Structures are given as C-alpha cells and as structure tokens.
Amino acid sequence: MAILDRSLLDDMAASVSATDLERLLDRAAAELPVLNGRMVTAWRAGDLSGVAYEAHKLTGLAASFGAAHLAHAADILDRACRNAPPAPRQSDIDCVTEALEPALDAMATWRTEWRASR
Image (tube, rainbow, N blue to C red; front, side, top):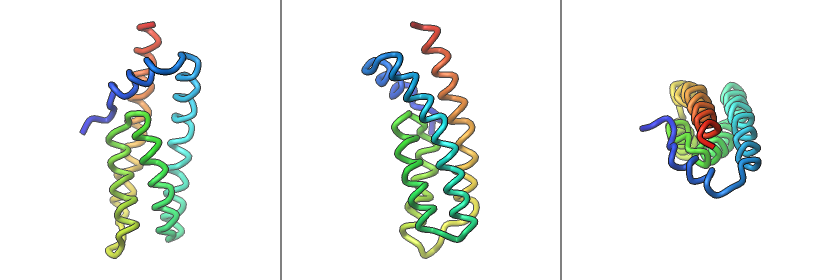
C-alpha cells in the first residue's frame, strides 16, 4: 500500500483555493500527531473505547488527505478495538504510530512539489 495517494491531494488542489489548501494541509499536519498522541494515551490507560475513538478520527483525517497507509493502519486498530475480544495488541498501536511520520513526510513532499508547480 502506498504511503500517500497523491491523486487525492491533486484533486483537492484542483478544487480549492491555494490559500484554503495551505490552511487545510497545516491543520492536518498539526492534528494527525495530536490524534495519535491521544490514541497512545488511551491505550496506556487501558481505554479501548478511547483508542477506538481516536483511531477512527485518525482514519478519517488521514484518508481525507491521502495518507493511505496511515489510514489503513488506524482503521485496523479501530476495528480491533470495536470487535474485541481479542483485544488489540501493542503491535497494532505501533503500526499506526510508525505510519505517522512517513505520512507527514510524504504530505510535506507533495506540498513542496505542488508549490513549485504553481
């Protein structure tokens, strides 16, 4: 699975103003780590409903910005929480956390290339 679905961001760039796109990308880049942090905090507290809630939000936001691998990992975790038992494992949390930085890096690279192409 690709880290980033660039076509989704290309479509977004074609449908909103450059100012709005910059603002949306800023917000996503700021919010994705916050959601991941909340998810990890809920995990450490043993709060599976909290993990599911944050993973669900993370799935939606990541998918909206083409972060396909991150969205997929978060969706698997969300489903595991909602369908427990068996409960999700630490490795499920780790998959989401490990997908975050590559997604943010890929989004930043796409943004740099998009700016250069305008």
